[in-house]
Image (cartoon, rainbow, N blue to C red; front, side, top):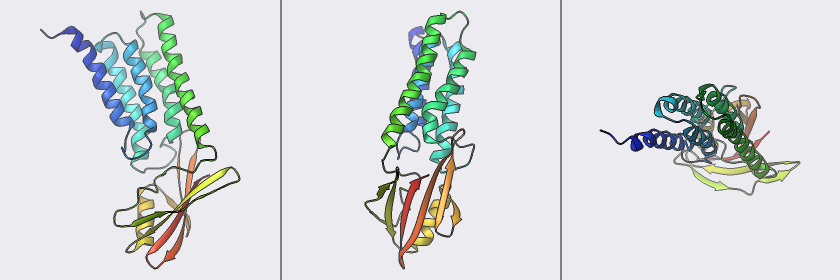
Length: 227
């Protein structure tokens, strides 16, 4: 016979490990999705058995994948959650899922505290992220890492009027064309011949724009910022 204790914890461990792997996708940028592992941890604590916990846990994992993977793949549009929405919107949706799936015999106090903690931690992380972004240069935002084969020289960037930008000069064979193709593959679309933007966000739009300026026959300067 199997060990009931091992069985009781195995599904929880598997779910948390899977959530960490999904939450850190694409494994090369800022792991915003790690904040979304908290609701899954709380659900694992609230659910009493695999029969009660596995199915809702898989729903939470699927939702986490939706919030993290499309943006990591470079997709854009109104159905692609932004990075900040992973921190606050996902916990709200997760709390609703957990409320529906909560065993009715579970103590009201412990269940309520778990759901409040789920949402509260999400808003706390969101506040920290937003404060950290004030007067801060944008992250890679899909512009970096640069296409292979190009040399990267990062400039000093610029801050002013409550916003900051970053700039890099990319050089190499056919650099201007390669960079445009790279940005297009990361969800950017042309707004003007020298300006490409991409939008994400289910509730609030997060728009990043990149401006391209020729810096030589095989070099291009890219400046990007968050609108």
